[in-house]
Image 1 (spheres, one colour):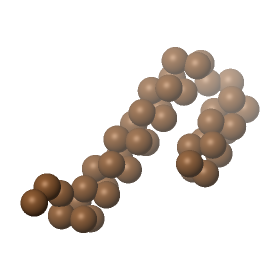
Image 2 (cartoon, rainbow, N blue to C red):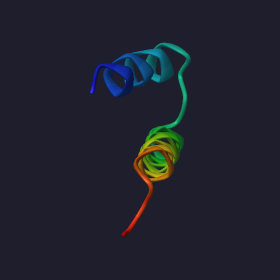
Image 3 (cartoon, rainbow, N blue to C red):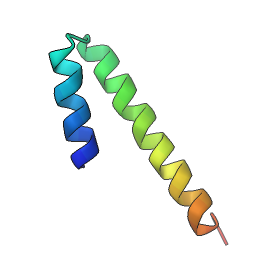
Length: 44
């Protein structure tokens, strides 16, 4: 959550459009889930 909060603040400061903020947060969340799945061995 800390990473998402910092990313949100940074995107606001850089005047990124709200639509792209949501898209980028979604990409970060999908990356985190994929990384965790790979790290833990996925479905067993």
